[in-house]
Image (tube, rainbow, N blue to C red):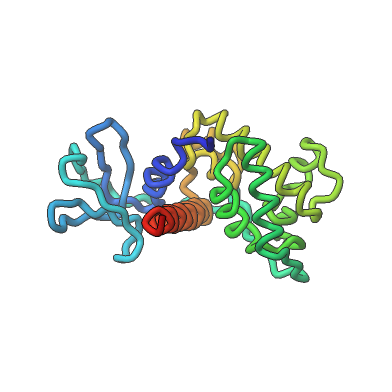
Amino acid sequence: MPRKHLIIAAILAALAPSARAAEHVTLGNGFDLRCDHHSQIEGRVRLYLSAGEDNYIEFPSQEIARVEPLPDLPRPPEISAKPAASASPEAKLSQADLAEILARAGQAHNLDADLLASVVKAESGGNTRAVSRAGARGLMQLMPGTANDLGVQDSYEPNQNVRAGSTYLDALLTQYRDNLALALAAYNAGPEAVARYHGVPPYHETQAYIARVIHEFNRRVLARQAQARLAAARN
C-alpha cells in the first residue's frame, strides 16, 4: 500500500509559508503554518496562501487554535530554486506507457503513482526531452550529479529517469519523516536550502512548485475516489 500519510500531508503541505505571509496560524493538533490572510465562511476558516482569493484551503473552525498577525517580510532572492524545464524538442510518451512506468516505480518504492504523476507534470509536463536552465533533464528533471549518483546512464530514457527520480523522492520522504512539503521542497531547491531555512525555503518558485504538485495530486486522488464510488454504486 502507498504511504497513507501522503494524502493528508498533501493537504497540510499546501499551507507551506509564503514569502510575505501576514498571519501565523496554529492548529489544534499543534501544527503551525503561515498564510497571507484568512476569513470565516459558514463555520469554516479559509486560509489564503497568497494575496488573492483563489489559492486557499479550509479548516473547520474548531481545528484552528489561534491566528496571530505577522509583519510583512521582504522577498528573499530566488537564487537557489531550480528553474522550470525549458521548451526543448518535445517527446511525450502515451498516457498508457507513462502510467505503466509510474505504476512500476510507485510499487517499487511504496509511493502513490498519482504523486509521481503529479511530480512529472510539474517538472516536465511529460516531455521526456525536457531540459531546465540549470541542466536538469527528463521526465522527473534529474540533475546530472543526482542522476550519476543513482546510476542513470541516460536521463532522457523514461524508465531510467522515473526509476531514479522515484528513488530520490523516496529517500527524501524518509529523510524528512514523510513530510511531503519538505520532500518536495528538497526535490526542487535542494536539501541544503531546506536545512538552511529549517523548513520550506522562502523561494517563490519552490513554494509555487509545491502548490502545483499538491494541487494536482489532490485532484487525482479525488478523481480516483469518485471513480471508485461510481464503480461501487454500479455493482
